[in-house]
Image (tube, rainbow, N blue to C red):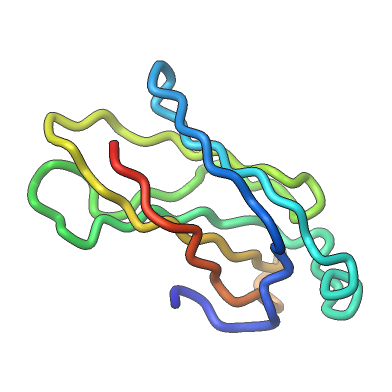
Length: 113
């Protein structure tokens, strides 16, 4: 787990990698009850890709530069090109704009590039 806070409201998601632009896009649906209960509607998303193997083939940690809100339902992250194949663990969590609160991180799976 990357972050601990209120329950992560994502209840379904997809991950798509655009090879031409070296960009991963995650889209999601969220639980309206949890969003309302914890008032996370405008929390910013953090998409984190972690290369646990760190075998010299890629960056150990990649994060999104531009943040989207929970309500937007999508987040992109640019991934630098590598000489070798690299596998990243993908996590997402949401944080209040001024750091007042955050959600649990959610492990979305792995992606090999």
